[in-house]
Length: 182
Image (cartoon, rainbow, N blue to C red; front, side):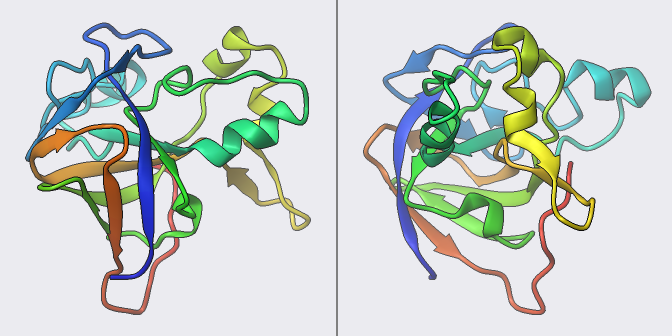
């Protein structure tokens, strides 16, 4: 294990809406995602990906975002609360964006999520708050795209996840591969 964090909030929605309401708990289902969430399933559920190829495996079953991002964008005048960017699990105390592909997140008593990659922020973020997209995706000094709107994963072991649950980090055997958009 390497590092620990905490679940701040859990969110889900049965509709393809931008934000997701907070819940007292969510149930993660192995190989599927968040029970009752519009993005749960073995194959892709995000509309843009379904339009391209509905048979693709769903590498975006669970969306996690770090609460620390909300403070960063808050300094620029934006107010973002857990669930409002469409994430299922809001975390605290973990460098989600720095995790390598294949990291296992042990959440609560039973759930395990394998990190598959970075969320690719969409223009809907500016529909939520104009100018926010530029705060969660940009370019580094070399011109490379930097995505900061959380990570995606697949459920390897199901279980109930609640605010306050601990998150343990198990890094994959090396060499580590940095996260790419999924």
